[in-house]
Length: 213
Image 1 (cartoon, rainbow, N blue to C red):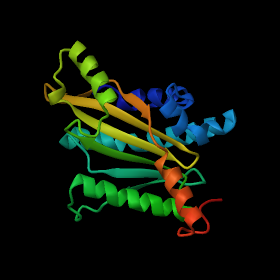
Image 2 (cartoon, rainbow, N blue to C red):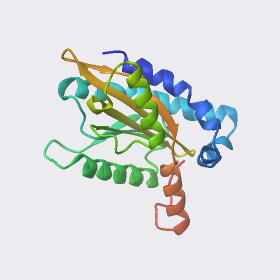
Image 3 (cartoon, helix red, strand yellow):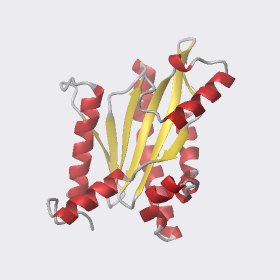
Image 4 (cartoon, rainbow, N blue to C red):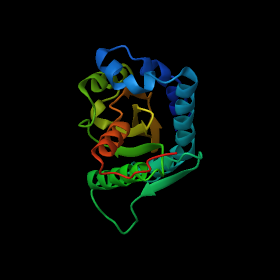
């Protein structure tokens, strides 16, 4: 398997370009993040890179073992420590239900001041979660390699930081001669949902009174 760790870490290094954003929509999505100083933006990206490097092996191991993963998150706190959030083996629920439950735990952790950033990992066999733009890019790249998009699965890694940055990494992978192979990751700026939800909740007075340090 091509080094997914290397691919994604390199892709994250391109995130500053994503955050400066070319489209009007991306400009809006990164308003809060772009308002930070350059040094603060570098800290945010460094936090996300550290979380990625600390958690990607878990996803790789599951893909190697069974071709997909049970949804899980990896969160980072204000001291730079990280930990996994996942359902127990006894909690056999559909992936979308598991992802929703994990996201709720992440939000509550942010409200309680227990985390500053999160990475949500899921895999999908269909193209439903992909935007038309992303799907078109993948279809073009895979067609150039002689691959059928119908035989490709996707690893989705949603990065969220309370500093107002959301980035989605989408990595295609497929089985070839009994081994799982990965293609080039594509990234896009997404809504900074964690930041927006926490800000809205605190303004409404329904969340924790100590969301951070």
